[in-house]
Length: 100
Image (cartoon, rainbow, N blue to C red; front, top):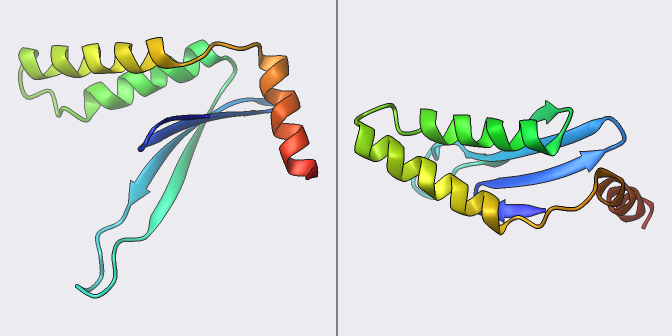
């Protein structure tokens, strides 16, 4: 499930996978950077969302409290927008998609 352009969350039979989009810097001006999705693995959706919040706060480089607070509020808004479904439904959907 896509959270925003830089984050998505998936599940498999082992647990929850939080993926962060990483774009490397272009090697020359003609080509863009290479995009890849960096996974982190979590036992529950709750832990995955806590990791998302941690990563976003670290992304502020702890410049000042106002910046940190703004980023935390943005993350909370992202989390509110995520449809909460049971792990079984996520795993079932992921399994069906792989079979097709």
